[in-house]
Amino acid sequence: MLVLFETPAGFALFKVLDEGKLSKVEDLWKEFSSSDSARKVVKLKAFDKFDNTADALEAATKIIDGSTTKGLRKFLKAHCEGENLAVADSKLGNSIKEKLKIDCVHNNAVMELMRGVRSQLTELIAGLANQDLAPMSLGLSHSLSRYKLKFSADKVDTMIIQAIGLLDDLDKELNTYAMRVKEWYGWHFPELAKIVQDTIVYSKVVKFMGFRENATKLDFSEILTEEVEAEVKEAANISMGTEVSEHDLANVRQLCDQVLSLSEYRAQLYDYLKSRMNTVAPNLTALVGELVGARLIAHGGSLMNLAKQPGSTVQILGAEKALFRALKTKHATPKYGLIYHASLVGQAAPKMKGKISRSLAAKASLAIRCDALGDGQDNSMGLENRLKVHFKASSIRVASF
Image (tube, rainbow, N blue to C red; front, side, top):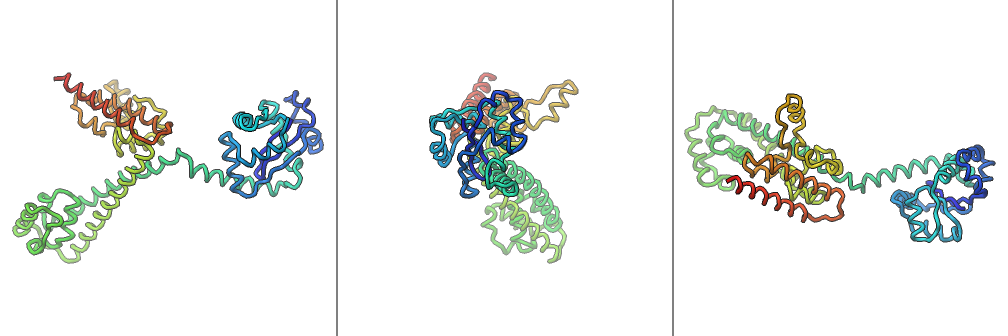
């Protein structure tokens, strides 16, 4: 019998000299108490050294997945003809047996044997010292960690969680800044806030106009419609606002610049979030939209965690405080949480929102599992379930009449 043992330096093949000792699993560790006794149990037959860290990383990732590299297959073909092979992983053994037709063994005795070989590894492999093995192990572990972090599908939704969190923060900041612009400039031109209600357009008008006396001389056609422009100019002539200095107006304009730059960045961030959601969770996005889907993923912690939740949990996700308060006071439990903001729930009549949210949550749970565990990248399932929920909502609406 041969033993396949993986090291950070390469693959080692050991020949078992006395297979009878494997029958006494509980006493096998005694055979590796010293290097001399270990050499009586196993002997190094061949060693396949890795050329560089990239080869070592490729071999490690393949073995973790239960498969073999081209180099390992070539190595085993050259040295394992007519021999049984002891391996540390049954999945790897099945892969070797399927591709190379080599009988593999994996049991408690093999695991004890592997443990003994590991304890005397530097003594059994000539030229492999402890001071060399430790840095190689550390370097390979770092490379493997970086590889897993870079290519793990579970980590992709981290970008969605960060993006939706930043988007919500930007909305709060924008509202605060826009309100401050209206309050500050309102001392000079209070009537403008009632005429131009959109905060972004308001900031553009303030930045462009400056003092209200300039309104009659300027052309606002790129910012406002003709009717609104005429109304602004008329209000500027009869405004009851106080006078402000150039220094005051300069600070107001700087605040307007902040509002406009934040608004522009928010639009870019939303486009980024939309593209990430369509890539990571296309079915969930088709069903509930980008923002609601991203908030569900963020609240669940990850797409995989969310996939483990039943539809009833998805339905009230985000309303945990209301749920526990209702259970404590023995009142009616909430019918929806974050999913309330989905367009299908919003379009439903007030009496039907509970039924639609329950149906939508059930379909969303299926869509989440399809996105997290499925191989497909299309949103056909989400679109199909959206039509079903929409049809159900229409049927309930008709039945109620």
